[in-house]
Amino acid sequence: ILNVEQSPQSLHVQEGDSTNFTCSFPSSNFYALHWYRWETAKSPEALFVMTLNGDEKKKGRISATLNTKEGYSYLYIKGSQPEDSATYLCAFDSSYKLIFGSGTRLLVRP
Amino acid sequence: DGGITQSPKYLFRKEGQNVTLSCEQNLNHDAMYWYRQDPGQGLRLIYYSQIVNDFQKGDIAEGYSVSREKKESFPLTVTSAQKNPTAFYLCASSIASRDQETQYFGPGTRLLVL
Image (cartoon, rainbow over all chains, first blue to last red):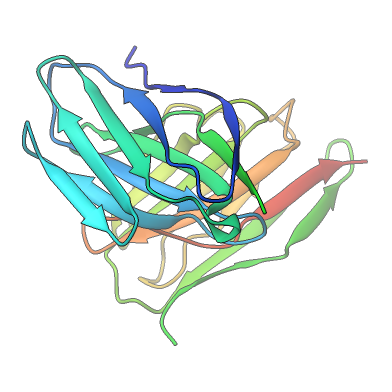
C-alpha cells in the first residue's frame, strides 16, 4: 500500500513569517509529485507538478523542492500573508492515479 | 468560463436510499475522477474514467457506481450498500489519465445521512 505523509498536520504562523512543510512519499515507481492548495469553500487548485530529482519550482512567494531518491518534497512560503491560509495537499503520481496526503492546514494570523 | 461543476452542494440521504451526485465539466477533458474525503484523511479515489463509456474502480469503490455516457458528465451514485456514506465528495478531470497531468477539481458535494 502506497503511503503519502504530510507534516505538520496544521500550522499557525504570524503574518510575515516564512514557513515550510513536508511531503513524504514512496521512493520507487515515481512519476511525479503534485502540490495543491485548497482554500475553504473553494476547489483544490494546482500549484506545482514536479518530476525530476532536484526540481525546484516557484510561484510568487511559494516554492517547492523535490528529492525523489529519499522520497520527500518541501513546500516553502516566504513572508506568509493571511490569504495564504489554506490546506496544502501533496499527491504522489503513480501514473494512472494520484495518492494524496492528508494535507497541512496553514493559518496565517494578521 | 471553463470549469467543473458539482451539484448539489449538500445532499441528505435516508437509510436504504440511493443518491446520485452530479459532476459536469466543459474543459473537453477525457479523464474524470471521483474522490472521497473524510476528516483527517487524504482524498481517496472511488472511481475514474479515462474515456467515454469506460471506467475503472479506484481504492474504495464498494457501495458506489458510476456511468460515463457523455464526455462532459460523470455522475456518482452512492448506493444503499455504502454503509458509511457521510463524507465530502470531490470530482476532478484531467486532459488524459496519464502521469504528470494536472487534475482540476470541482467545488464538492457534502453528503449527510439522516
